[in-house]
Length: 269
Image (tube, rainbow, N blue to C red; front, side, top):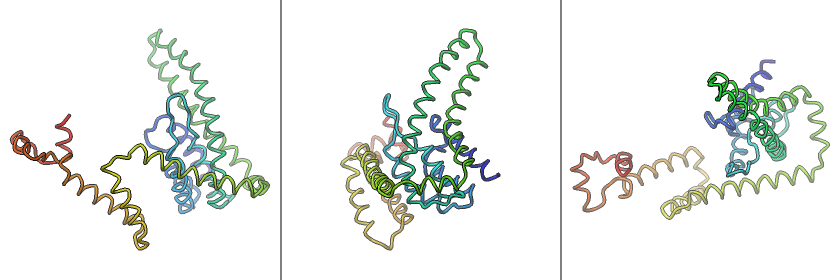
């Protein structure tokens, strides 16, 4: 019961943070890890969350387009992997894709309901009731939390037996197809992120990362440290960021610049 309580609480927070973007509870690496912690299987939660995070890198709301819901996919799949059902991480990945689409439909429905609440907020504003406006905002936020919490409660109440039976009833051609599609989505999401941050200055570091990844003795922690060191060295040596633009260095020194790259960037604005 305690584990179920924390799972529902995490799902509620993930649903709210899908709109707030304040504490990133909706991110797969956070939600799946917390669900794994609540169920006593942190390792499986981290592995599933890290894999789903790569899949969700390219999921973002652009204009009126609503992206697949990472919160529902992360919470429910993490519960199935780390909870009593004990499905494999591979199966959890296959389940996450249709769950994300279902969550997308749910979030569109909730956002449609909040259109009505916005008119209620307008009426409260005409009355000059700040407390009424706050109540409407909290109601809309609670609906987003319930959007994830209610499906999670249903999965918990159904129990591992029917869940496993439903999963086993899915043909292998579908689960394997979803797994392959999920792999493609990971690549597409990563490519979208690279496309947004691609600049001539960053391409050398991108290819250097591929070269270093061939060294099997380096794990992700070592790669992260190397990347951080290279970034700091680049900031210190690049005239673009350290303010030492040849002949202008004397004038900048006279203006009291400390040579700090962050100060130089702020001074330019």
